[in-house]
Length: 466
Ligand code: 9MR
Image (cartoon, rainbow, N blue to C red; front, top):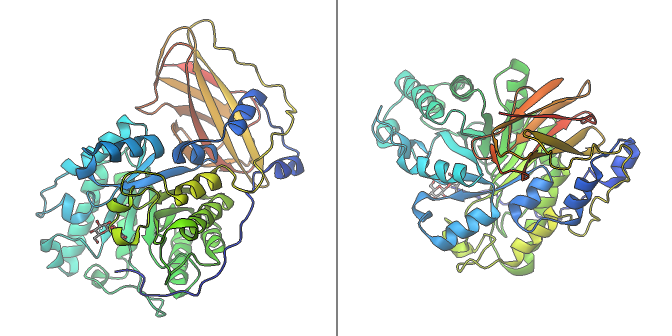
């Protein structure tokens, strides 16, 4: 059930991104590896995924396993997106249709497609009042609590190491002005069911970011205030929570709220990442396109907004197809909304981040003549935060795995890494390749990146072939 609240419309303000040349200059921070910076800036991305990656974000889509045999669908998916969310395949009714009998076939197909094609996965959803199997719907009390904990343990363990972020709990708060929890069989097991779910998920997959996900929380209102209070309480008490997902299903009765960016920012200020998790906006033409652009600019203006996922690929793939809410039409053509999103990711009407003259000569990195590899850093620094891109280039021998080492300045903390596995978040850190980008041909290169708070690394990086 959605959109029972109609919010007042409001115009969202276009904001410039924080990591502009101005911010760089004001911060007086060295930008180096000039050649790479110029390349990255001059060649604005031409797909949603690459353009988002240039901003240190991902761009994802909800994917249905039964569409992976549709060539047009897969063509767009592989070209445009670098994150996937299984639309239904990881839900409780799909993964545990009979108690204790787990079925992962369809979800595994999506995860495997993602891994093969260099995409990451948002897991959706471990605990939800809806789409429960019949046997769970009929349970209550401690038996249901135990079944939920077992479900989370089993599913999160099955996918351990393969999930970027889990929607651990979905839609647990009530609509309207009550500011309370939604009544459900899960809620009736005790108010601590949400924290029990998060603690269980952390134990099963310590490497996944753990998110709370909901709708009608996109602006400040009684419902989002209640979620905010829960996140604040979890942070204060050490309940593991890393991110909050804002579904962002919009239509004319429930448009992008005027305080969308401010609402994302206030959650980020609690010390969690924020993600736009199920974006769709009903409509067409420039009106729809403008709303999409506003959403993207809001995310880019919030340093801890780590990515955007649209809830389907073509309009005909949407669970609300009649509202034509997505970026591609039924034939797979790009809509004006697509162009608005891409332009927003590439800087839109705000000036692109002009490259500041390098104050440090980059360690020039011709492909190494011997075996081994080199790592070249590109730093984008703004007041309080940074994004670092690292290009790994193979020498004369192809790489079968690589490790990059660097030291972060004191006070710097990594909050998000993509395309590599970091060993830590501060001080001396190493980054290992993931399963899909360890193999690099002789003289070829691959890129990973990380985002953080504080001052980004301005020294050199080591690269070691596995
Ligand atoms: O897109 C999903 C659709 O195929 C299912 O029939 C529906 C059943 O509840 O769930 C849809 O996905 C929902 C998501 O899991 C949670 N937030 C609302 C989504 C629909 O917008």
